Image (cartoon, rainbow, N blue to C red; front, side, top):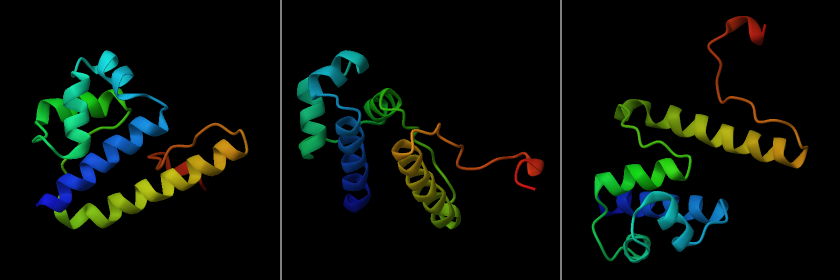
Length: 107
């Protein structure tokens, strides 16, 4: 179980750094004290669900529970989305959705 928490903490810290935010700036945007953010990022405090939700949303992330059987598919969608976003950024193109419900768009 510790491994999953470490993954969440790493993802939060990486998202903060990718947005170019300091802990102090994230604190100002989220209302979570900077000292608490520091403790979360170093694993020195239990991450409360309420803090996770607030921090994630400020960082444009959405905590979501998915059925365990679907985790590989969800991870694949996320990887593909991140890869495509990186390509689009390099080519100065707008980001494309990770999936589409419109069947006629691709065919």
